[in-house]
Amino acid sequence: MKTKAKTSANSTLILIGLLAIIGISVLWFAGTYNGLVRQENSIIAANEDLQNVHTSIFNQIKSQGLSVEKYGTMVTQAITTAIEGRYGKNGSQAAMQWIQEQNPTIDSKIFDKLQVVIEAGYNKFESSQRTKIDKLRVYDNTMDSLFTGFVARNIMGFPKKVTDDMRKTITSAETSEMMKTKEMKTIDPFAH
Image (cartoon, rainbow, N blue to C red):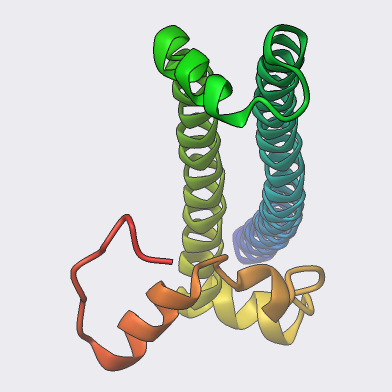
């Protein structure tokens, strides 16, 4: 009888052990799957955020640039009106004298403000792109790990949403050329 009871107890332990292994495996599988879904969604959101940041930067710079242009036009119109009012339409020589006397200028604060908007925009874009790169690194580390990566690719079917296009880093032609030639040229801020 003891043998039958012992066999029954062993069978129960084996069954409990198998159920525990299956339960742990299911939990691991579900956790891994859900984690990868969250990582992919995070990468997609970071990629979309880059678009949002770029649109914001573009609109801010364009608006500031239009303000500078409009201000310059207004100053030019004011000078023209003042000259024509004082010297007539053909009073160019007297107009030059007036310009020298008045020394009209466009306030440099307008250009300073535009430069601040441009710099802040570039910094924000760089930060958003760096966030996307970091999210891709974490995702790639998971996908490249031995067991998890194998299961994720061959059983779970990942990557599901992360495309090669999302992996691309937005760069300038100059940076692309530097990466190709492995040579960094001196930057001339006044070159066109």
